[in-house]
Length: 337
Image (cartoon, rainbow, N blue to C red; front, side):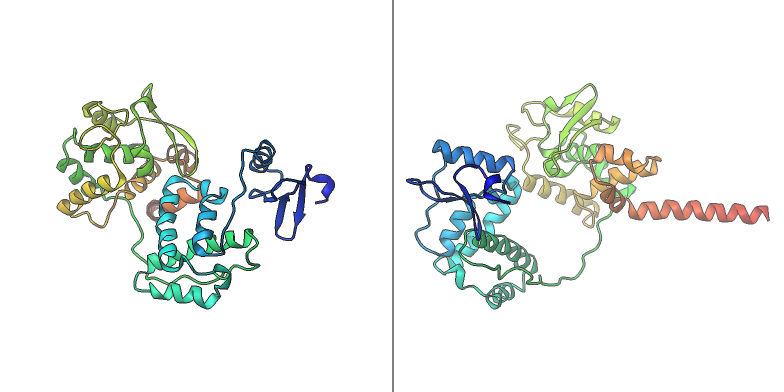
C-alpha cells in the first residue's frame, strides 16, 4: 500500500495507520484500511467527533480501559462482552498496577496454572488475556503477544451431548402442564430448533401466518419457521401480558437464561433426565427432521445450522439409520441368493 492510496492526513507507521495533521492530535486507526469501520473513524476524526484515547500510564488498568473503548470490544456480542468482563475485572484486581509490557510467557503460564483446579476458568482467562495482549500490541506498547501459543489446560472429555430420548421427552411433557413456562420453552426449542438464547428473545410480534420469524443472535441469520401443532397448543395456552413469549414470574419481561435453566433443571431432576439439558432439545429438532426423511439443506432451513453442524448434530442417529438400511439390504440380498 502506497501513500497515494491512503486518504489525506493518513500515514502508515511501523505498528499501523495514523491520522497526522499539523495542529491536530495524532490518532491511530483501530480498524483495517478500506473497511466501513475505517471510513467511519476517518469521518469522526475530521468532524472532531472522536477524541483520542489518552493513556496516563502503562498499566493493565489503563490497557483494560483502552481495550473496552476499542472497536475490538464494542463489536463483541452482548453475551460475549459480559463473559469477557468477568475476566477483565479479574485481571484488573490481580495486576491492575502492573506494567503489561513486562509480562513474559512464563508469567502467562503461571497465571494459568494458578487456576489449574478450575480448568474452565483458567482456559477462558487465557483466551481473554490473549485478546487483551493483542490489543497491547496494537497500541504499540510491545511487539509480541506473550499469551499467544500458550496451551490451555487439558480437561477430560465430557459425555457428548445427545437428543432427549422419546420416553424422557414424554415424561417432561407429562410433568409440565401445557400452560407452564417450562412446557412452553421446551416446545419452542424442540419445535423451532433454535438455541435457548434465541427462544427467550422471541416476541409475540414475531409470529405471523402460522410461523415464527427468527433472527439468530450468534449467526445473524434470519429464518421463517412454521409452527408445529405441539408448539401451537402451548402458545394458545400461554398468557400474553408481555411482548415476549416466554416471560418471568411477574409476566412483565422475558425469562432470563439463568431462571429458565434452573427451572428446567428442577424438572430434569424429577424425571431422571439430568444427562440431557436445554441445548439437547436443539439436537431433538435436527434428529426428528432427519428421521422424517429431510435432507441436510431442509434441516438447515429450520435450524439455521451450517452443513457441518447439521452433520454433527445428527451424526449418531444418522449412523443408526444408515446401519439399519445397510443391514436391511444385506438381509434382502441373502434372501435372493
